[in-house]
Image 1 (cartoon, rainbow, N blue to C red):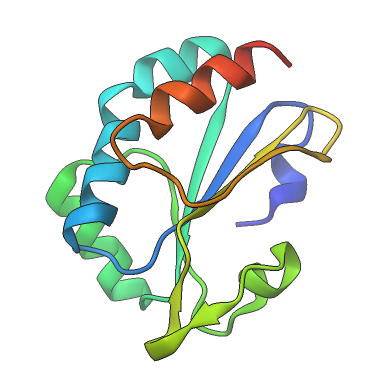
Image 2 (cartoon, one colour):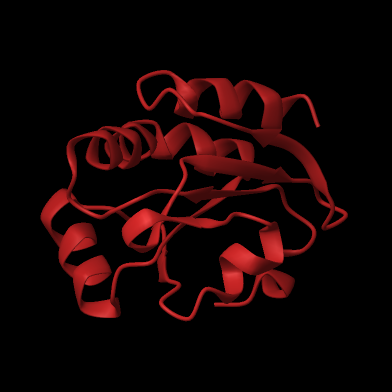
Amino acid sequence: MRLKELRGQPVLVFFYPKAGTPGCTKEACAFRDVWQKYQTAGVRIVGVSHDSVADQAAFAREHGFTFPLVSDSDGKWGQAFGVPLRLWKFYSRVSFLIGRDGKIAKTYLDVDPGVHANQVLADARAL
């Protein structure tokens, strides 16, 4: 997946530490649960972690995610966004809302997985 392909529409790129862990599952499932609202608003979602392609696919299948999950095992996405890998090669829970112009409109640090999906949706609608 290339973000260039999504230019012209708002995109949320959310980095998460590890597929299948409680906080990451809660965050990704919250996006899944409001997916239709994101679709209606024209906002795309992309999840990114250091997990393998197989682990990402299993995570998506298990929870029914319809948005893409990117395996950033080489760290290129994290490096491009300035999200460092923490101990054991886990990303911090950080998200970026990208505007239609392809520029970062808002950065979310230390995300609360329980409220993040609705918070981002409100911000995306305001773009």
